[in-house]
Image (cartoon, rainbow, N blue to C red; front, side, top):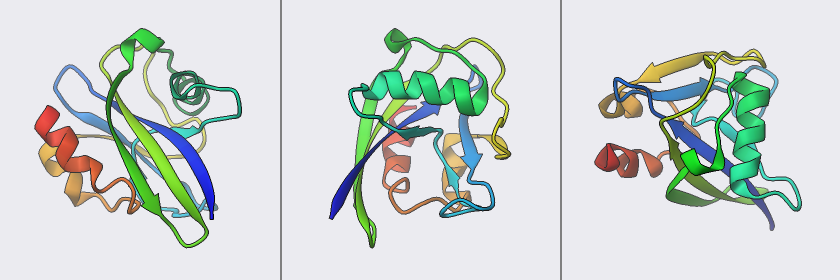
Length: 132
């Protein structure tokens, strides 16, 4: 089974809310809510992948020094195994907006379970809730 490395981030605003992005139609798991991020390219660190993905997907900039490792998910799907480090970030430049047609929502940590998420993201919810 192939291994896929994806980096994700919990963007946390000044009110302690976390940003979720909804997977757009036409993508696998369309309609589910997830922490922003994306695949780590060969010879790319997870932090570099997040900085690139946040710019491409949300139009915001952050720095590696603002990405704090928080937890990770290790989940087997039918056709691949996902390894996903989750970082926390409280500082970025710009206003997040869905540049790839995805809806965005700022969510209180206690309400994260109200949003249907991919199976790999669900175990990260209590870790994030405890941390915040």
